[in-house]
Length: 380
Ligand code: LLP
Image 1 (tube, protein in one colour):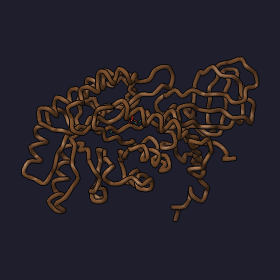
Image 2 (cartoon, rainbow, N blue to C red):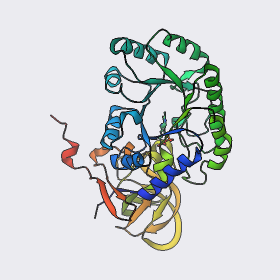
Image 3 (cartoon, rainbow, N blue to C red):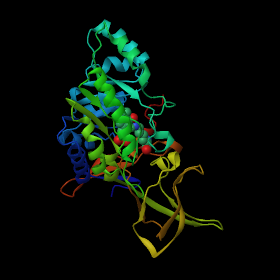
Image 4 (cartoon, rainbow, N blue to C red):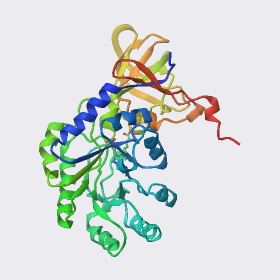
């Protein structure tokens, strides 16, 4: 009815997980934001707005998505290591900005002398902590491009003195898909200590909560015991959670075109690959796969591949799966975060449609499939 490839989301799961986030911080004055890089569909962001969330945006595009969802400026936090002047003037009314460098602070200083008014600023700290996740998604090691090293904080704060800049706290985000609580405890305790030293009442602890793609997810009761107590004395704690909320709430449905057998392997060839879900190709990420209509029960080792012109166009390698019937469908699990938002038009393919299963169980189209007209709209 909606065609394939198709992303399908569950409103119920999104709401459940948003509530778990808030519950984990019970007793804390929490400012919860949804990191809409994980999924920019305004229909989903609107659900989170309804659950009391603001958004964490990185770009004007994500700001636009937030506005379409009705998020007020005072509920928006702006992140990014490459903020440009144009963005700085459009986004100068958001609630908080996480400043990534001393160089950025200089730029805000210039703007504030011109306009007299800029948002409250947090300094992003690089605590040099290993989050033990994929290298491409770790952000808090000193070799990473993000944040200000702790020993440069004094210099940064000095720059802000005798200016209109209002620095109100520190921000820390050490990476994504983190399944151990220790790296969080290590990074956040450093930044808590720093906040106490400088007498800041607000703190932003980023996101990064890992979900269960294969065998392990972040143990939130451990997190609650070890990390949350560190935050008790703050007047406000900002979080920026993406994957944990929407990852498990979304699946990707693909159609089986062929079951191809060679001397070497069995390939399940489906109608979308790295264009619709790039995580396996880009990070070697694992996503569970369900065969919706198996030919028989036995499982054999297969590679699940897309139709694009690259050997790297894979969704799974060496996976034990039932052989699906040709023309039937497979379902890719945990595809709600960094799925559609990282989809591309490579090989001039059209980006998929998105459907939301509402709380009362009804499917609702929330994004149309692209058309060739959309694809070439900007050609002159
Ligand atoms: N805050 C900051 C400053 C971030 O950079 C990120 C994610 C988040 C919050 C949200 O993190 P989450 O709660 O979703 O883990 N494309 C990669 C993930 C990149 C994450 C980038 N930053 C993937 O598909 O695994």
